[in-house]
Length: 304
Image (cartoon, rainbow, N blue to C red; front, side):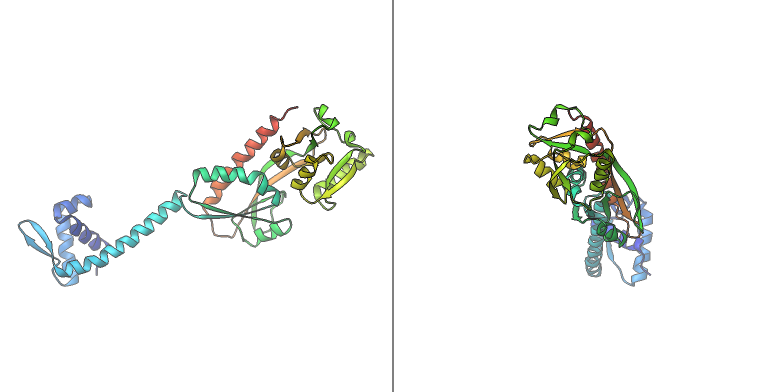
């Protein structure tokens, strides 16, 4: 029966034209090449080469056989090249799902870092609100997810990525810009842009105001931190939002101040447990961690 070694020796002989150079190509000895050739000819039942003055001349049968061998090696080389691209992250696809806010904030920077190292990889980003986002990750529909939750949905593994405090955002000319930090009492009776009533951070903030016995004057309610910042930038009032979105707007007629009270804002990475392992997930998680470090540094550098 023909073996892979037979084919390997035959190809080397066809390419080099001599047993000596074939031996060099395969890092073996000339007697070994001659022995394997004799065995192959015995297996196939016909001569593959004519011996003439120390050189090998392929027979017509050998030329015909080499056509198939060449095609087989092209296929193997293609497989090897694809494997190398995957191993070196020069090719592939990654599917990410995240809350809409992250598509404006942490994901662009992380994707730039990831693309710098793996330019041949395509990243597909879908956005979805909770709890549908977590349901889709439980259903193993994406390679990686970003959420504000700190409890892993069923069938997933959750890793904390970032914890920073919510911040106060103020428009140009606001009187509270004179302060280095904003107390909730400072916002009493002042125009205020709020998140929607069912937003979990809105609920926490309203409870904190209620405990102090004060309340801002709500002028606009809107469902996303991006739109909150857009309204603040128009001068409609102050707001309390997550720092990722605030950093994305800072310097564009919008200013950021820390709060004297802590409202922790958490970002977590979720990876499905039962989806086929994508080698790119760890590389993308590294890019997210690097971007999270940059966000912490930018927050620390904000003017006080």
